[in-house]
Length: 311
Image 1 (cartoon, rainbow, N blue to C red):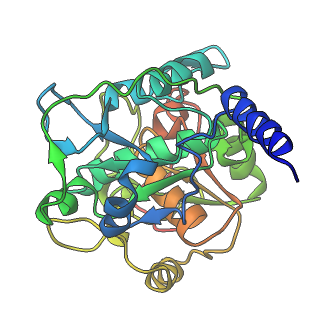
Image 2 (cartoon, rainbow, N blue to C red):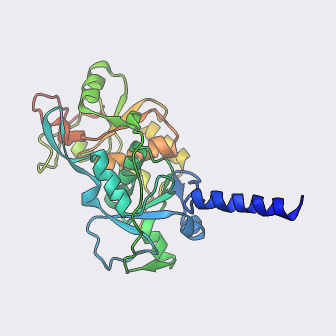
Image 3 (cartoon, rainbow, N blue to C red):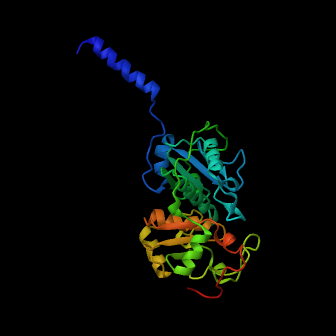
């Protein structure tokens, strides 16, 4: 091959690279959960989204992470003409939230949160679920979250960085992981799936309920009780038990971990943790999250509730 032909081939390669640049973010998640050492080794290849209840500009974070306010993860919405809060946002609103965090369609995302208790650990699983719903499968959750990262003295910062505007667009939705109130009405009637209540047992039994946005005590008829907190290890750092222990715990609660299931709580927050555990950690692809949960179910006082009974 003469030099002129080689020069032409090199020119063509360079031309293609200019037209179709290789994405620096084209990187695949190794699984639904990543550990802190993995993230440290791959920090330059991923986008870290840190879900916080009330993030401030000087909030300590994993180096380069984008802070996502919990209040922006969910939204007000109408379902069959009923006004609801704390719901899945519209596609355009979610696109904007992700774009502002620097997310592209080929980004590998690691979702993190404080992970000091059940509630803030499951901030992360809720965003994870929404990413999956809106068709972004290249995502993982940081096991142990920020508290583990900071305890291990890994790279962190209290200064915000501009991630640049992302070009994330929703091209498909995964409706199989979303359950609506109509789905729950059908399930109560036909018993075609296992309903799993992820709230604490006092709420399940009807001893207590969040009167601010839930309008009745007890649980949805037929539901099993599985407080999501029991699947997180004790201590100041919340990490998941291994899958075999989780399976055994579910079976001890009378729940088949391989059955078709729908998880719910008060507002689709804690139930996202149970969805993540069943769907992602245990690999049961037939699990959905009831987005409206008890908030939506109890909007209609004629819908049945069960109290003081373990089913």
